[in-house]
Amino acid sequence: MTQSGFDLGLDDPARAGVFFVTNEDLNVLGAAAHDAGLLPCHVDLMGCANKATLLLRIAVAMEFPTTSSRNWDALSDCLRDLNWMPAGGYVLLFEGAGELHHEDEEDFDTLVSILDEANQAWKAREVPFWAFLALRERDFVELED
Image (cartoon, rainbow, N blue to C red; front, side, top):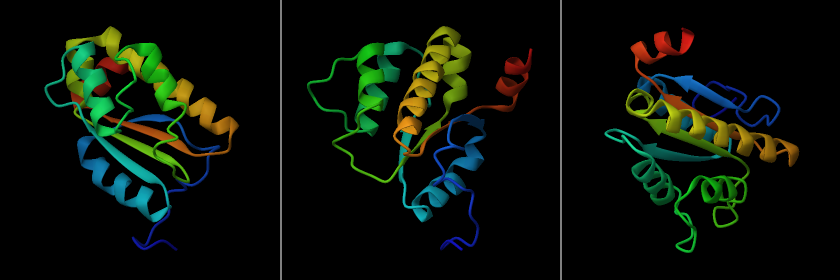
């Protein structure tokens, strides 16, 4: 049993992946990540409408090395490394990801793809890597279409 009284299985790398949730889910997921001994990292995407802002917000929230570039390849490299943030596993909590989905669906899809690639790389090392992107209700409907 965890400190919070429930176990979501976040410590299992085989179950880890990229998931869409609501903003209300993020606090519970962050607490469950902490309870599981994983490093939760909150990334605020509220008002984020373009690639440059997206990459900057992730880099700041995750304290990327100052030498890292601000492009998709650098994001992918950093997410698959994280040697400056040693932990037993990682849980990325993207607040307001629905705004990015609405403003720039192509960049949103690229982000999801990079997160999935990072998950696969960590899974091969048997380290849990989760990404939870908080969407609005209307975003869930759009994704189903």
